[in-house]
Amino acid sequence: MILIDGKKIAAELREELKQEVSELKTKYNKVPGLTVILIGDMAPSQIYVRNKEKSANEVGLKSEVIKYPDTVDEKTILEKIKELNDDESISGILVQLPLPKHIDKQKVIETITPSKDVDGFHPMNVGNLSSGYESSVPCTPLGCYLMIKKIEPNLSGKKAVVVGRSNLNGKPMTQLLLKENCTVTITHSRTKDLKAECLEADIIVAAVGIPELVKGDWVKKDAIVIDVGINKTDNGLVGDVAFDEVSKNAKALTPVPGGVGPMTIACLLKNTIDCFKRAQI
Ligand code: NAP
Image (cartoon, rainbow, N blue to C red):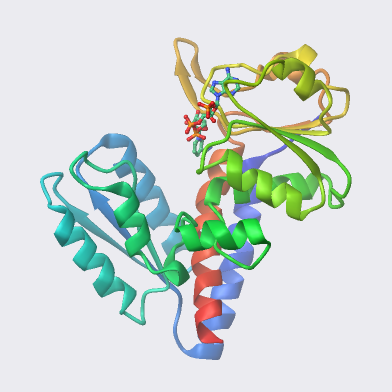
């Protein structure tokens, strides 16, 4: 079985991006800029943002974090986003989620101009992805996609099952696999026989949030299995896939941690650079 080493693949991607940033700097005499807005002091968000900033600096991006207390009003955030939309030195804007309850998440997402929406959450980018046009793609499914392509460059005709239909993971993952000519089944909490669906799959992407939901006897021999889940349990962090059981059948499998997670941040950097490049045309 191939253990898909997300840390290693992400490090290789960051190295390629670093090279690309250096070439862009020579060509345009400027580098892509990423601005992250962080509201409140929730520990996980602080850690994510710190890691994003560190990785952005590592590849040579101009990076900035703007912090607000969780009492900040919605108008202040929307005005700051509009100011960043108009700032030519900023290629990508990300507002770290979740937001305090008094701030409307959808309004925030829709205020970021689609050309700087590095999270790929703006309805315009969602629509472009599902229409098969160029767009920013949400970072986690993009990372999954790049890992799958490392294992199997030609996905045409493969049967893929995506477990979970969130806007963040399941739906964009489905679109990426469709674009590669997979036959995709998207499953969710009302799916009647999830095991039977998974057993059909050459590729399984599990993005559910239930510890070890996908069992060894749900996976056909030689399937590629990508585990997006991050679940805290008494036994530590586990994914949505029963790793030990599934590793006996799968051709390739991502570990948790060290699989999808590191790719998510690397893909944020990639999206920032892609936004910069599109803006130069
Ligand atoms: P979410 O928004 O809660 O969506 C979960 C999806 O799973 C829903 O579509 C839900 O179906 C489906 N589901 C729930 N129970 C199910 C069941 N028994 N069988 C089949 N499907 C079921 O979650 P998310 O934001 O996509 O996140 C999923 C997991 O990925 C979480 O563990 C999260 O922490 C992790 N995550 C990891 C990364 C990373 O970088 N590695 C990034 C983001 C998220 P319904 O639609 O019918 O409710």
